[in-house]
Image 1 (tube, rainbow, N blue to C red):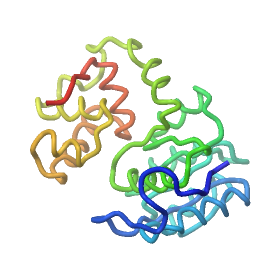
Image 2 (image 1 turned 120 degrees about the horizontal axis):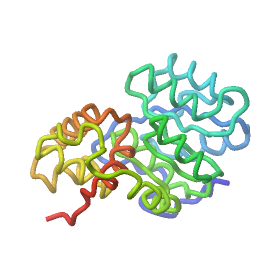
Image 3 (image 1 turned 180 degrees about the horizontal axis):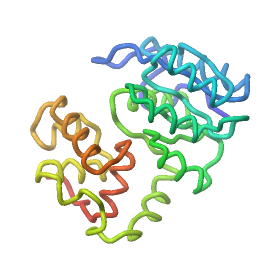
Length: 236
């Protein structure tokens, strides 16, 4: 279950500078979990839960109604599960990003969430501060993967395809290739901007172009492609 303490970076109730209020839909089939998540997210003034729902169909409807920045999505729910709900939400377009939160870290569930286009994947053992920061990160366009599963995802993906087989890789400009390599190292937009000596807005634009050229839905997928393509190298 979620730890409602304030361990980790930052304290509950403190909003980070430079960002507005993040609007969130919480989707989980357990009433107590939804209540706990809403309390944790509501403890900080820069995050507001606009709807709580108990299944995937309701999550899709809530996104259409509220156009949130983030859906905090459980995977195993009755009826439409979280993976299919994620796929439908992202296929509809719009600004909403999905952060998957689950008690399960099985490989097929991680893979399913990433293939569906989820921007991040956290376990329900995450502490409150990290959950809050994960929501903020996804809202500002960054990706989030639980440390417990990052190594497994990367290890499983590296070597699965030869670099030359990555579709669209040759269409990237030199700068876009640098951006993709940064994504592979888990850099945020702000960190990409600092490393490449460009504005954060320009970094975000480059990330969007990389995703479009490679036919990807999220920067987390791009990070895996960068691993597969052998683009990881130390920053300057």
